[in-house]
Amino acid sequence: MCGIVGYIGDREAQNILMKSLSRLEYRGYDSAGLAIIKGKKMRLAKKKGKLSVLVADLKANPLEGSTGIGHTRWSTHGVPSDTNAHPHLDCKGKIAVAHNGIIENYLELKEKLQKEGHKFISETDTEVIPHLIEKFYSGDIAEAVRRAVKVLRGSYAIAVIHRDEPLKLVGARCDSPLIVGIGCGENFLASDVPAVLDHTKEVIYLENHELVVLTKEHITIKDFEGRRIERKPSKINWDISQAEKGGYKHFMLKEIYEQAHIINNILDERCKKGSISFHELEISDSELEKIKRIAIVACGTAYHAGLTGKYMLEEYAKVPCWVDVSSEFRYRDPLVDKETLMIVVSQSGETADTLAALREAKRHGAKVLAICNVLGSSIARESDGVIYTHAGPEIAVASTKAYTAQLAIFYLLTLYLAKLRKTAAPAKLGALLKELKRIPALMGELLEEYRPEYNLLAAYAEGFKKYYHEKHNKTFFLYLARNINYPNALEGALKLKEIAYISAEGYPAGEMKHGPIALIDENPWVVCIAVKSRTYDKMVSNIQEIKARSGIVIAIATEGDKEILHHNINYLVEIPKAEELFSPLLVAIPLQLLAYYVARAFGYDIDQPRNLAKSVTVE
Ligand code: M6R
Image 1 (cartoon, rainbow, N blue to C red):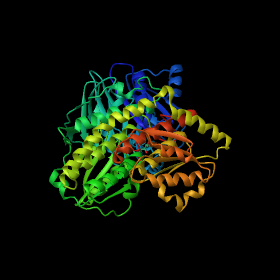
Image 2: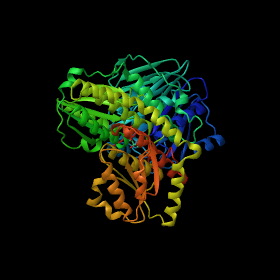
Image 3: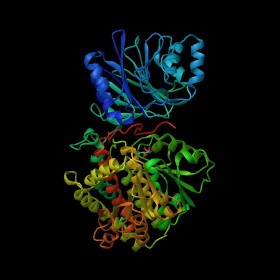
């Protein structure tokens, strides 16, 4: 949540910072701002609204100078407004700060600073930071920042500049990500790698409680006690083109269409000569053999991937498994111990609740394995072992390719553990791996079938919009499924809620008769995942129950299933034939596309839905 950037060098900072902010807009987009120093003057531009509003403002009033910081905001404290937008200043307007995170003790600090005469103008927690730095400043901005962070409580990544020291840019982090981009005669600060990739592929990931001072030639890292730290840069091995739309109308659509390729790469990379390897995993086979239970903890879409993981891990690796949302796990007294393998799943690797859950599990002695997309992220670094999904940058707020990549890793992990623990016959595991390897091609076929030019799901979405207006907005969606596709029902509903703002619930179909069936009349559209499986007949009965009560049914069924057509369904979506175990990878695609096309039919901002941000780095 919130993106921060900084630049120091010889070039004009404004355009560099704005381009970098545009790469981070997925992190927050309710206001944005810049502060740039030229000579001994600092100028500020801050606007409520998307980055485009700030662009227009800067066109009329450009900011000159070669040292600056910028911010794109997802509000926590204080409504989106020009005043609450970052950067924030001290009393004299000499110090500017951009901040990502939450300062938990800001009220206490603010009260104290006010008593000492500091004047505040915004409603934000952030504003205490420039005032604290002002209080501690005696000619060295880095030292003043160091003293200020020592009294802050909460999570933060900050970028700081001082009008009187225009040749320095200071950053510090605690529980919010911050990277340094290493340029030639110039250096960069940012919340995430895409912000600097136009200029460099060499980055340094700052660790918690580290402070960095950048000049255009030098980078000095210290801990909060002031001790020097040497850190080798990391080389980024992906391209900025991967963080661009590549001809698609939206990032979400591009990311949906990348999925077959990504899953294929994951399987190619991890399965060589019939055996599975997780080369970066620093948890040994003997440790994995000993585990007695698995606890999977994640948020949102990653939680749904974890729920799917439970079905496969219990069935094939025969390990008892439970799944929790991170924000619940962290505040109960969980029964995890050194015999527990905790799997945390996170695309961004920065989700605050998941990070806190991970720390809680470690405190109880559990081994923590992360399934993560972003290299070097906090969750990846703090876990005992990590398996990267290598899905490339996911920019759309609605997660799609990270989800199916997480599923692919769960499949491989299941087969790996089943072999290690000898819980399934080698021939069976070999056959399953062979079938799994067929899935990317089937995903490719499915994506081709629903390619953007004539997409059946787009037509269904238009139909829904018409019906929605006819029914005076009373219609909504239900998603029903059983067994290993039940988490997909939750995921389909989540996708629709977050980008199309339509009320949607996911349910295990067997639960209908325990309450939700009361909702069925001619209003709801019910997506029934009825692919060929051991519970197919039960799903068909559920479809009949819905039809008997005038519900509108979209059935997701297996190609060639003639029987489904006899049940008076309203809309049919076919997926290729595949083993039930692997069907979630296929079913996910039409669910994602349906949400996408409904949001598009209503004309919503698909990649940046209201109130959301890509990585949720606050509680
Ligand atoms: O980065 P993470 O995977 O930890 O994020 C977890 C959720 O915030 C995320 O999946 C969210 O639910 C998505 N917007 C769903 O599309």
